Amino acid sequence: MLQLWADDLIATKLELSRRLIRHEDNQNVSWLKQAPIYLASGLTAEMISGVIWTPMDVAKTRLQRGRDEYTTARSLLANVWQREGYH
Image (cartoon, rainbow, N blue to C red; front, side, top):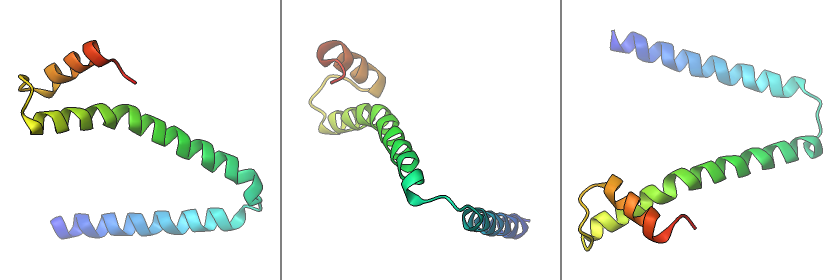
């Protein structure tokens, strides 16, 4: 049962790769027109990632140090937000 599921998953990924390659080959769009789209997509993804993961990394680091009186990430982040804000 598990092997059948894995085979289907691999086949699906291969088919998706083939379709994407064919789609890109059929487009005659210059890289100058695509570059701003890729740039905007990358910048948006990095901004969202920074907003989500930076507070989590701060909480993880401070909890691992063990110098604060907080035992949960939620209470630690609430206190950091009140004292330091989001810079």
